[in-house]
Length: 138
Image (cartoon, rainbow, N blue to C red):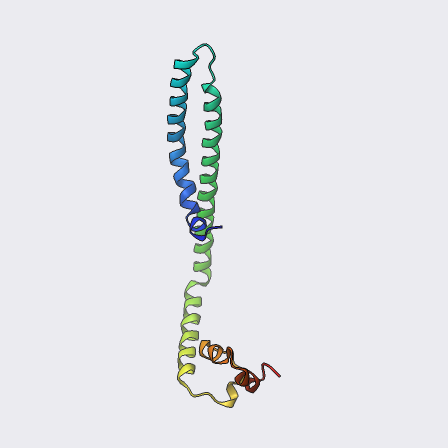
């Protein structure tokens, strides 16, 4: 699936809910005119109206689903922020400050059990002797 289309799917479903009734009216109007000019004794345009009505209902249902999901995401996010917001932000800031202070300190042998940062991973990637020295590969 196209990631851009996936990202804009909610906007697309809301747009279709607005544009589909207008498209349906245009298509039904054209079909009605064609039917009246070509075979007025045998009306068939109402089948087009029936099918377009189903398409409009489906577009509205998809838009309703999108609106319900957006409202649910808003309330869940608001609940999470009210429950954990300030405390989580303070813990994250403290964690980032500790990582920044630890990154400037020189490496010692006591750092053997710490989680690697991106520089360590890039240093070890494709470097067989360094992997053996770290004990990752035997």
